[in-house]
Amino acid sequence: MGFFNFITQEIAIDLGTANFLIIHNDKIVVDEPSIVAYSRSSGKVIAVGSKAMQMEGKAHEDIRIVRPLKDGVIADFHAAEHMIKGMLQMFQAGKNRLTSSFRMVICVPSGITEVEKRAIRDSALIAGAKEVYLIHEPIAAAVGIGLDVLEPNGHMVIDIGGGTTEIAVIALSGIVCDQSIRVAGDNFDSDIVHYMRRQHNIMIGKPTAERIKLAVGSALPELQEPPENVAIKGRDLMTGLPKQVEVSYTDVARYLDRSLSKIEDAILKTLEITPPELSGDIHQSGIYLTGGGALLRGLDKRISSRTKLPTHVVEDPLRAVVRGTGIALKNIGRFRFLMR
Ligand code: ADP
Ligand code: MG
Image 1 (cartoon, rainbow, N blue to C red):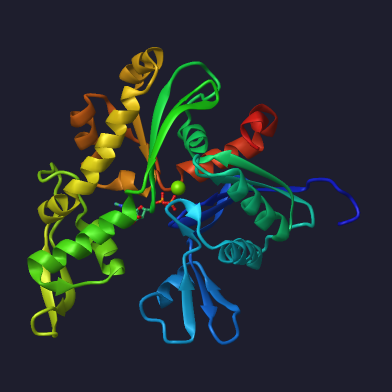
Image 2: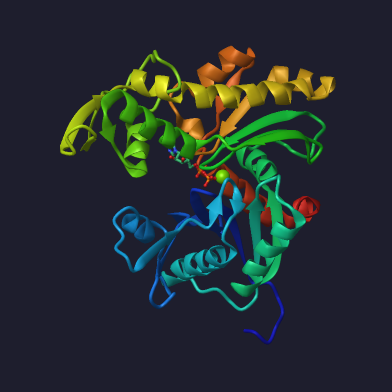
């Protein structure tokens, strides 16, 4: 195959802080946490994705767990490269085979520097791609939501991921104004750890905090369809013994209040710097929430009441970005100028 230089295959990648997704032929073929596990003694990769995640918090001395992305940017390039390679191998472990010349589109945070872009591109080339394109996440999200990003109408898209919340106003294929803040899903988990300790004297780990968030996470102290309380086991700080407490959604809404206010402040700030013509558009079309954080119960309502704007949670928010990246890849003629 290597003899011809045709592009015979295309894959789209969402290189997220929390989750790594690959689309191939319109299908999501990889959806794994962005984690790599190494053996300290040999320096070799022993697992990527969910297998590596299962080792987190339980690893013995020889295992080193790395999350290559932090706060939306690549914190460890070597690990990112290993992760891309490992995920491509995972994809090929089924019946799929990658030829020697495939095209890859990767979506990247909008605040990324040229140096970081080059590093990601190099990682993709080392991983075997022939052609590499990068697309900005908010644009990919907007395309994935089904908004027409090529027209002059303005749209506001908010992507609440693991490490960052990206707030962007998009019109005429570009990002007109945006804010990126380091308050997102991971901070919600830390908030829960912090308050569980302060209020219940119980020590829990981040994975347990995330479980609480998924089970009874809420942005509002009152919900129309409240989830049932969840029972949580942890270590009692006074006695050092295991203990169990019940957590309600109202508790979690209180724990997350400060972080959510910070996100709301950033949204208001972005609205303030939005050109008036586009403000009019957004007033009509409202705000689109995407990323895993969009799934927090009552968040749309909370943001809507603070901004006085209609607020929509997009369909399948954990996958909107990779969907949009896939669509851009398929229509590369139309979207090429968006990818650099
Ligand atoms: P990234 O793009 O940074 O990889 P994602 O968009 O994949 O992030 O979102 C991951 C974040 O969403 C994690 O912090 C995860 O805990 C959170 N998340 C996933 N599902 C839910 C849910 N149902 N409620 C609240 N948060 C969620
Ligand atoms: Mg993301």
